[in-house]
Length: 462
Image (cartoon, rainbow, N blue to C red; front, top):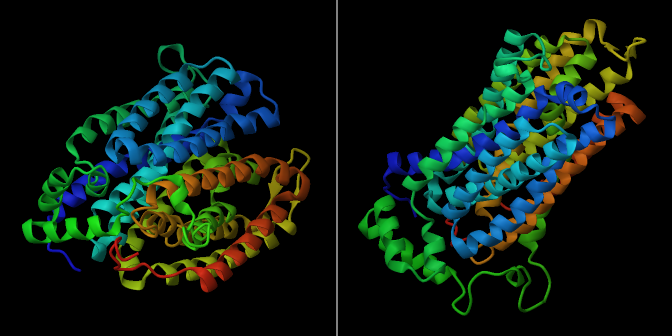
């Protein structure tokens, strides 16, 4: 069913929801420029320094699990508001922390917020967007994340350019890395305020028996006739005997977990094991290891974020035309070969006595290949996985399935972030990229054999 809908309104609502994704990118990306400052400020070991980064991801797993479940009880919009408050508390507290324990606590709180929006934003957008353009709307999730990375990388770069290094004192006697983190406060407050303007998800309202309110929202989005038809479709797609719950993930007939849940778990995990967050979380460390200065490393982060944003923008025009599966298959093939090339380069270069990798004439080529890797990821696996997770589950399962899938997604992210420094020390950069390349190859095989297309299908059809 193709809707004649209120495009400006739906886009405005989706953009407000996607501000949560912007904060997702900002909050996770800000650590990229503060790693050196944190190690010196807290006198951290390699393990503790890694945990300063990864601690947020534990909160992300909990946030993804509980927010999905709670959104079935209290509403998508309500839980987005809770996430906005958590972002504010985390940004304020992380910036003022004077020990690793304090910092980890506030980063964990930020993780709860990031995990929440990681599942709530695609869920909410999928539930208000028309099927024919749902992929384009869904891309706002990944675009918001990358925009958050771009803004925070730019602000980190400018702050270091003004102060000299991330550990130097800046305004009011506070170190620069603290101001990097406090930069999140303004967009977090704006996000919280604008959430009062958007409506609750009509599908949630139907689940709660608030059909009149759901119809009011649907008519506003799609018009009277199509709004009424959509209300009927939603009502018929939901089980009539109970509200959504975790036990729905198992089939009543077989007692086994529905196949679609397993598929969601696998694609969410593969998205992380491709290794992209090594670039987004450890980018500055990686560039300095290759031989760039701190300031140049931060500038390269900006270039990488621009490349990623370009991939997302192009994706908006392809996802509903080409479909989800073709983009994922293409992404797996190209990413595999870029990681293979990086593994080859790093296996054939040497380190100097300070541990800096001497790339020689491979230096520019390496930067080009890494940016190609980032570009293709954000043309495929980055946004497509979030789109599919928002739309692949039936109405009855969506909240519960996203709770489990979101939890595993962030556990996988945590594993990648925590193991990268250890793998780097034990098998080197070439070995690390070989491992990620192996997972990329497996991901392509999985998509080819097990993933079904969801392009232009109504959520009720799925």
